[in-house]
Amino acid sequence: MKTSPRLPGARTQTRSLAALVTGLVLATTLTACSGDDGGDDTASDPAASSSTSPDAPTETPTETPTESPEPESGSASGESLTATGSAGVTEAVVVSGTEAGGSVSEMAFALDTDQAKADFASQFDRGFGDVVSQTATEQAQQAPDSTPYAATVAIGCEGPRSVAIEAGEAGFQVVAKIPKTNKQCLAPMTYVVVFAAPNA
Image (cartoon, rainbow, N blue to C red; front, side, top):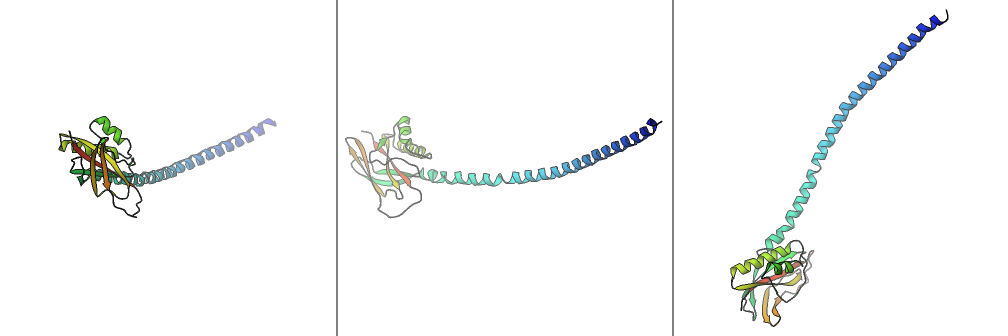
């Protein structure tokens, strides 16, 4: 007699618990759905901002590389100088490069082979050696019966205004006349004199 009244009460409690669980599941599902919608919105916003932020840094590096090669490519044609001296050379070309390195020497280096060009170019940075090698090749093409030479005559703010090329027992000596100045520059320039000496 006492067990039958408890069974309906237990069923009522079970139904209440089932309704409560069902309500919680529905509430969680609705919250998850609205959270997904909000998540989509926030996911699209960072995607939009992240797609625009790489554009700005990409523009800045492309400007920097295009600025640095300009002086090198501009100096590839070189500047003609009147040459004097006992070597019989009447004209030379001076090429320059910003922060190109190198070692100053009055003795000219023969650039008559690819290996010789590579050896001389190895002292320079930032592709300046290629500029010097190209200029030497052009000099050789203009005077087929001659040998191209080069000498690093100065590293600083001022380049040579004239050059004397003397023939000696050790080879060709290049004496560049560089103006004296107190001018200061932010980046030193490397100046190389390239010339073609007649073959003996």
